[in-house]
Image (cartoon, rainbow, N blue to C red; front, side, top):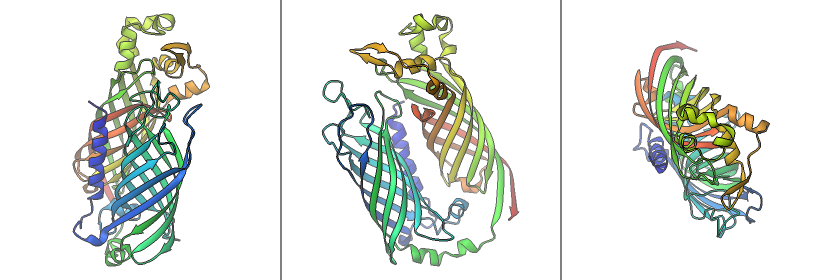
Length: 419
């Protein structure tokens, strides 16, 4: 399983997210937003190449959900969904290069009872970056080492001027690029940006003609669920042990779905790291010196299990999920940390990562962020559903591995009542 399949899945999900409106033939629901972004690429490491002003051009294509009768659209204030295409110049084309981005997004109105001018836009997708770390020609750019990378963008927009078919908008936000720990170094590219954009689309007419969607009897729905997933991912151990190996995972979870939109739950996961297993079995660095007993059962010490809490937004066929958990058992992470955070020269370690309080937090806290595609529309509350997903798994906020999963969800005890 190549990690690039995760990016292809994101593209497919973006197309589905954009095309979920029930009245796809109504061209009034379509909009386009050209956007200019300016900002600063933050230093990814000591002696990071000097950067000038970061410049980017994005064009977003999307649709309003105001014609939709699905519950998620009403719950989220009839958000906009679509796909963004962009080119980013990080401010040093020779050493950091440019990124070419494809990103599905969701844009939600804020403070809608008081103002229609504020919006929050969140996108997650993939980028091709044309310049990478190279030990000989580009040794001080430790940000990314692969051409294809994950990309994330979060922006707050304010409508400066509003007309019937056009809005001028000012934006402030953050962007991130990294490969999900599939190759090191991978410090990631982080930027803070301002933008000016023109939102072109006749939303006013759409809202006026579809007010009936808001006049229907509003009921509250709750239902319980049980879910199972199995995944396969890839990661590397350190800059010295930099070959990609598989991570196999399974997880069980259960919880509650509210108003067919908000999914909250918790569960347990189990993972097996092929990288850890081979490092132990082949008696590589630090095994004999620190944990020789691991060689008696390499499979056991290459595993990880824990518990997690989960929150997910259900948008028809698409789900956006964030998990945070606790690693109950991950013994090899002590070796992982020392090697991945260590300093080395010409392939030999001269310093190991320190086993400090920061290490203890990283070892304990796990997190997971990604997008799912459900075969059946979640708005219909199907009892049985299947999904595929692409996720970044992390130790706290530091990428651990990228993963592609297949899962199953069973819903039961659907209840409805008037508010």
